[in-house]
Length: 478
Image (cartoon, rainbow, N blue to C red):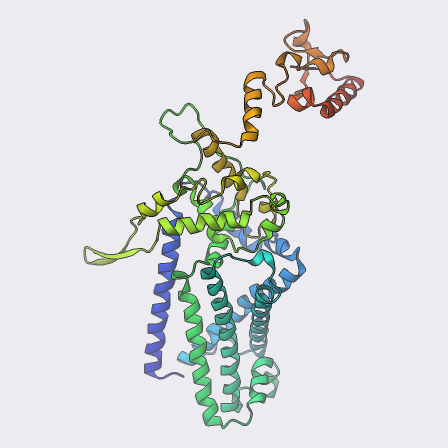
């Protein structure tokens, strides 16, 4: 057990780590909350239970075997290993042994081995194989990734070393049967079996403190790290759109005379869920590698779109909550700390986000389908497009002719509107509004522009008319 001084030092370190963790999460909250409100709290229990029972995320990761070989050991390794880490701390602090079963030690060490393997393999993929889609694009984020990989590996290695030297210092701690249930610690003990028990006891304490310091560093890192997806991703999955895979666009009330904008012109025009997406993004690049625009060398990367929004958000909203005294109590000052200079310095449309990237999107939602964290990319792009078209009357030159044709002749080709039904001239199709018995028609066949004017699609319209007639369906067209 630790001395009284050691226990005091442990508590102080825990308090410092907890403070930094809370400040980091408060910073995330302050940044995200500048977004517009959106209700994602309905069916809350179903959302929470759906998160714990949801397999879509792991299935998406498993589509790429190499990525699954890296990610799944990390995920399940953390879950298993954290139990042993807490147990080790309690055992050293107060001598409390909650799980005396040798199988618990086996599960803990398996978790540690999985975690260590996953982190080392992730470093191999990122820095040796140099998988292109894993590139973050900024050294600030890359150095945090290096630090996180190193820190997690140190936590596991220090754990094994501490238990290994404990076996040397206290042979009676495990009998021979229990030793077989702690393979990594047993390996350490066998490698250093020449160390004197007294020295082994000191080394056990040293590596225990190394393990604790590395773990507390990981707890406190949210205050300084731009990589917060381990905290944001679970929330993002809980607050996902639940009714279908396609999130509906916000309906615009054009009769609202007080409304000044119709799209996203600044960050606060996004919803808080849109901004949370940016922090939930792990920058794994699955969206990018499955984006038809990106794969055909268009200037769109769904991953970089979220990254640019997040970087701009951090520029204009530092998010660091200030502590002040109110009526003798210490409270967080939740006042938004926007940098007006930074907000004015960059324009969201055109400077933070490339306008050509916005128009390259085909809205196929492959990004949404591939994202393990349920990010909603396409709606952000559509809202940015709305701002271009409705607020600034700015759109690609290629669209100008289309818009003009639609305005003048109600179709993109600019063919005279009076010729819309020419394709059906020889098919004896009733035209609603012209046929005398139009009121007796039971169904409307809505042909649309392509079916009326495009030479290829007119063949589809003609074939469908023949099928409907053969089936005896009462129908007409406009």
